[in-house]
Length: 115
Image (cartoon, rainbow, N blue to C red; front, top):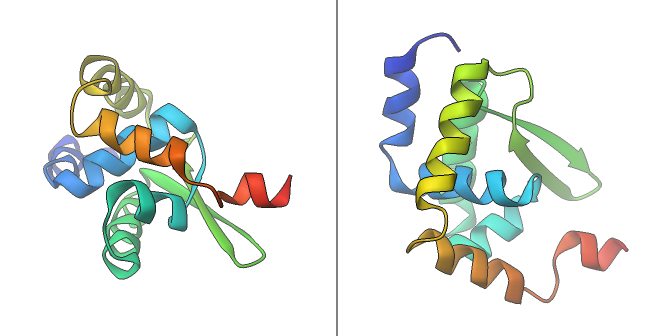
């Protein structure tokens, strides 16, 4: 993606922004983790992730029944820098801090189940 207007349009949706903040904090996350942390339905979270994936902001990886997402490592540097800066400035404030707290409390996270 080389279109800043499209990228900022994606960030304008609060669910997508919060999902990106979680991925910036945690690295790779399963859809079930994002659903739990964001307190949103799986179809809604998956729809937002599909938009981010189609735009090249995130990439997906299947591991058995789990679909994992992370910020795309080949996305433009300016995009990754903006996500990182946004996380540094707002990642510790609400609702992002609450999202991360809920994620930490999730008992059946895929890496914990598989480990």
